[in-house]
Amino acid sequence: MSLPLLPVTAARPDPARRVVLARRIRLLVAATIGYNLIEAVVAISAGAAVDSTALIGFGLDSIIEVSSAAAVAWQFAGHDPEARERTALRIIAISFFALAAYVTVESVRALLGGSEAAPSTVGLVLAALSLAVMPGLSHAQRRAGRELGSRTAVADSRQTLLCTYLSAVLLVGLGLNSVLGWTWADPIAALVIAAVAVKEGRDAWRGDACCAPAPTGEAPACTDRCCTPANSTT
Image (cartoon, rainbow, N blue to C red; front, side, top):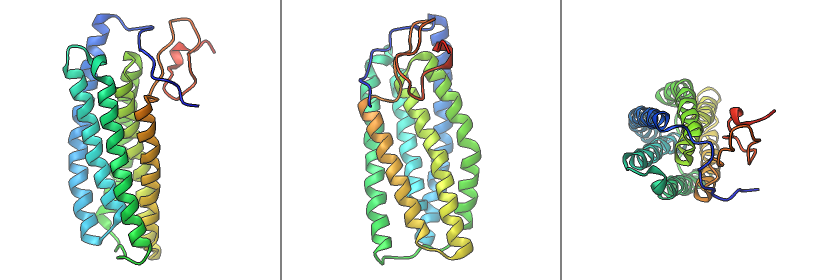
C-alpha cells in the first residue's frame, strides 16, 4: 500500500552534516549527468543504426536520468531544498511516463511487423559497462539521500538503480538477438523497460520514493526499501 508524502522532520542530521551530505549529493548528481550524457549519445546512435527499440529506449532513459539528476541539482541549488522537493519529484515522474509511452508505441510497432533490429556489438558493450558502473553511483546517492531525508535524492538514486536493471534487460535482449537471431527479443526487452518506467514514475508522483525517517531509537514508520537500518530496532 502506498504511503502519503510525509514531512521529513524527524531525526535530522546536524547542520554541518547536512552541508556535507548536500555537497556529496551534488557531486554524485554531476557524475550521473556526465555518464548518462555519454551513454545517451552512444545508445541512441547505435540504436538508430540497427533499428533497435530497446537500445534507443535505453538511450532515452539516459536522457531522462539526466533530467532527473538535473531536477535534484536544481532542488539543492536553492536555500530551502525541501520547498522544491515536490516539484522535483513531479519532473522525475513525468520523465518516466514520457519514456514509457514512447517505448511502448515503438515496441508494439516492431512486434506487429515493423522493422527488425540488427545485432549491435556497441550496444552489448554499453549495456555491460552500465551494468558495472551504475550500482555504485546509485548506492552512494541513495545512502546520502536517506541520511539527509531527501525523497528526491532517493528517487534519483532509484532511477540510477533502474538503469542497472535496464542494462541487464538490454544485455539479455541484445544478446539473444546477436547469438540466436531472435529479433523479437529486442522489442520485448523494450517493453520491460517501459513497464518498469511506469512503476517508478507512479512512485515518484505519489512521493513514495522514501518515507520520513523515524526518531533515533524508534522503529521506522514504514517498511519500504529506503528506511535506513540505523533507524531499526531489530
